Structure formats: structure tokens, C-alpha cells
Length: 481
Ligand code: GLN
Image: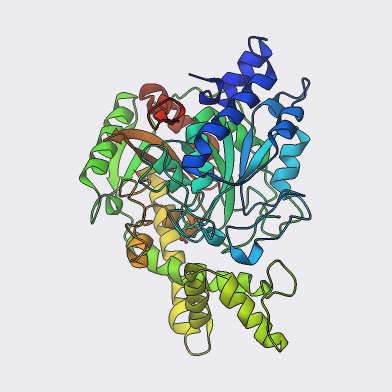
């Protein structure tokens, strides 16, 4: 194992004991970037290695633990493309609030990671700059939309990363890449400086190798921000060492998320996870959330509606790419026509349609009502259970190109993660098994502000079943690198 294979907290301990030099960690990650990046393509932009090494400061331990940032979170002075042609020449003029917070601790950014264009997708194949590959199997997708961040953490081209999650974009790639991902409670992490996709659902969160790192990174990025009107003024989460004691805890296994189209090998892993929780002293029972099956249609009305409004600002006047045209209108139309990829256009058209007069009541308002019903199902379930569990994805990482022609199939694969965003809840995905050397993720969901409880449950599982310790063999010679 190289240093790039260790977790942040392990590295911080080694550094504090002076067993390793801070610069060695950074060098190990840069070496990983040089060897693996040509195959994985996790990054859209990588900072100059010399600069990354020179950013290490002996008195600032986090400067030695490289972090990768999804390319829809603004880092001043670095490109921010959202994997779209329309922002291909855009340089971020300011830092997102999460980046400001990390900079206070001298966090060392490796670069900006690949994503589905404007975070719309589940495979990172919708990137205008080519897909990222899954480190566990180069023929397969890393998940999406934060596929670059998840793949980078899995192969050690960064120690940890930030992603964003609107309907599963942190958890599903974490699941596909065998790492840990948290979608925080809506409003606990500032969205200021995150390029908006669907503002009522978007949330930034950590992608890490284990639960302790996840809790640590979350503690650094959460907290109230006056620059984001949806940011909540509540007591922020503060990290304290985890115990993993879950004796007596009541866990609900969501019945509706274990049927219809689930891969039997994924189901087996989840059933095994249930046994692990029982062995750890928790009580596990099935629970029904009757409206959860309406989540995908509800999401595909609300998210595109918000996206169509948010993406109206990309018109060739204010940002990035501009196409030619004889009139202003023609220029705008050409810019959007050439600048946006097919999935983004599909969503803008869907969103404009459901918001148009005559259809607003029939689609948009109805979807809002369903969103309430789904949130109500969760509320009721949390009267009986401390946390709920489900697969993160009903299917294993799929082959590149396998679902590109069938957007509906791609949409349906997000059934387990989407309801959580609709209800504004926190959920964490952790590795819970392997099938043919492909990782499977378990999703643990809690009531609002229950992040510390989620970390305990996840940590308890992780200590009992250390699947998070496996690393893909890319760093070695398996792929001839
Ligand atoms: N896959 C979902 C979508 O395409 C979720 C994406 C996300 O969370 N950003 O909308």
C-alpha cells in the first residue's frame, strides 16, 4: 500500500507522530494521478503538481491531505466547466462557501473532477469532455453525476473529495466506486458557489474512503451561511470520535426498495447487512413507504422544472461560450443549441413544458403534492425507526454505453436515492459487499439533522464488515500502468 491508499485520519495520525512527512502524501497522490489518470479520467482540470506540493505547510496538517472538487463547485481562479461546452472557458471569479471554509484550514486542492453535464445523469457519460471510468472495472461507469470525485477517491488520486447530490449524485457514484458518500440534510451545507441544477434538491457533500473521514469532512463544510437563503441557522455538526455502538437501535428496511428490477446479488448483500446489524444488537424490521414508488416521476417533473429556470442564465451574454448570430436572439439560440448537450436540452424542454400555462397544475403542482406525501411517509416511518436502510442502487455498476440510448432506464435506476432529496433528509452510502469484484453500496437514511446518528450506524457496520479497506488494483500493475 502507498500513502495514497490511506484515509485522511490515518495520514493525519502518521503526520502528527512524525512517521511520515506531509509532502510525501501529496507526492503519493500526484504519482497516482500520473499513473492512473490516463485510464480513469477522473479530472477535468489538474493543478500544476509543483504548486500542489508547494501548497503544503508544516503548520497546517490539512494542506497535506489532497482534496478533489467536483467541477460545479467554484474555486476562485480555476476553470469551472460543469462538464459543459457552454462553460468551457469559464474561470470561477470567487470561492464557493464550502471552499472558503476549506481554505481556512489550508486544504490543498488537486483539481476539478468530471461529472455529467450540469450534474444531470447517473454515469458521468453526459460529460461534454468524455466519460470517467470505474477503477474496479475500466469497462464500467463510475456512477454519476459525481463520478470523477468518487473514482478519484477510490484510486487515491485524491484522499477525499466534494460532490453534489440532487437525486443521488454523491451516493450512487460512491456506491459504484466502493467509497463512502454523504448527502447532508438540505440546508446544512451552503449552496453558495455551487452551480444550481435544482435548487430545492441540490446539496454539497463529502466523498471519502471511510466513515470517519466522511464525518470529519462534513464537520468542516457544514454550518449557516447568510449568502445562501436556504441555509439553516442551526447548531452545526461537530466531529467527535465515533463509537459505532448501535445496540438497541431500531432500523427499518424499506420494503418497496427491495423489489422490482433489483439485481439479486445486490439484494443478497443488503440481506447480509441486515444480519450484521442484528449481530451488532440493532432491531431490524421491514417498513413500507407507500408513496415512494412515485419518487422518480415526481423528481423528473420538479428537477427539470427548476433546471429550466436555473439554466436560463446561460445565454451567451453573461457567461462562457458564445456562438455567432445576426440578432441577439439568434446568438442566444445558437449558443444554447451548440453549448448544451442532449441530456441538458431534454431536461430544459421537459421543465419548460411542465411549467407552461395549462400544464402547470396538471404536472408541476401535482408533483409538489406527491413530494409532500413522500416526505410524510418518511416522517411516519421515523416515528418507529431511528434510521432506515435500502440499497444505494438497485443495480451493479453498468457497462459504458449500456444505458446511453435509454434515458428512462437510467432515470429509473435512481429510485433508491431520489426520495431522500425530495424529503430533504440526510443519507449516507457505505460499501456493504462485492459481487464479481464490483462494489455494492448500502444506504442509511435518517431524519433531518441526524448526521451524527448516521455516522454511528455506518461506523458500526464498517468496523464489523471492513469492505471499505479494499482498494481497486489500478495502483499496481493489473492494467499495465
Ligand atoms: N441521476 C439524477 C439525475 O440525473 C441525479 C443527479 C444528481 O443528483 N445531480 O437527475
